[in-house]
Length: 536
Image 1 (cartoon, helix red, strand yellow):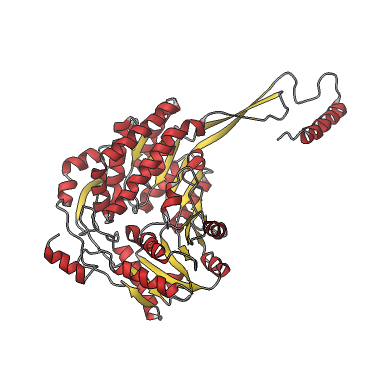
Image 2 (image 1 turned 135 degrees about the vertical axis):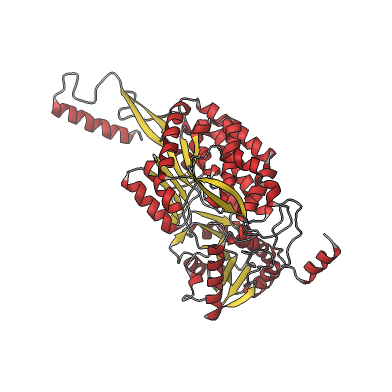
């Protein structure tokens, strides 16, 4: 950093972070675009853009409904062969992919930043998440999917085995905000379970997903098992749902309802991770410094464009002023930047729609009496969609920001007197995705956590511990979705369960000279004995 830049940041902490040497043109070359898009089924043309400057990144193929149908046809043909590949060989693809992602992470970090506008450290969260998921399912898929023995209807006479079959072709609609983790990260368990995938990533962030596809093929995944289609959501999205054997969707609650209706009409399964209005509770015994630092991570990672980020911050009244002072100081010290290098604390919003929502929520709240403690303004001097990390105090119920998901770098502060009051306020939303509790007493924190109606709760952190614990399920309650990713639920949802029951020696019917009444009496005695001997 030059002396002049260091001086500027000393007097204005929200000055831009230092610029990196690489540009979009250095990263997104015609050769790279040609390599990544050669597998896209599309007869039209579209383009994507970088939020850092608003400039076009690449010309891309655009898919029609007929192209989606072709992609499914190719995927079905390939899936029939992929299903016959032993599960350990399928899992080995994920483990090789894990190594490739970590070895070549610089490539995808550039793409994630250019397509989403996020800071490099926040982009690295995606690399971490995908590597962890690849390792977990690469190691555990054989045990999740192996045939399982169960107790039969008649002890020793009925032999029961549970088998798991792939559903076929999974239709996946992935969002723009986490273009690596929420695209290929969700597809990995589907692949190792023996499915093919037809994915529709968001066009504006599709190069990241296409890079991941290219790497999976390098790791040994048959190319036709992973199909990608691009295009406008209202055009291509319904076609992806219409042909799928199972649907995986991450996005808004409104669109999620439409996806669920389309899947339900065809009687196919669906998993949905939808919106959130996530709460963080800072109890009176919390470490204020650690909670303030954690709040910065929880509220402003990826510029708040994270389904599990915190938008409502409840602080005990005894420590509220001290906490807010420290939180505001840390927030005001954050550096905004668009360089393809580490150093910036926060990047850009993704585009016009997000900037409009964030600006509208802040302006309306202020007009109705809320106070801006930090931030509150756009920063077009850095880039067209930059907005300062913002803290609002004095937010009240009529304001849209109270209940609507902002999906940006804005958090509202509320005060509470008791744990019961804090829990009630945190639960007073139609959403239920993630929450956070801060206290020095771990037992107390876990007790409060168990009362919060969210799919994940983090104690003394914002979101990363629960999300990163991939052996455990992650997903939403209430309007935040259906189904779970990660753990056994995250892979078994991509399978159909089949029970094979073999009856031996005696039929489950009158035999050995018994008439119907004698058989009924015999079965009644058997049932009583099975209960007495604690058979399950």
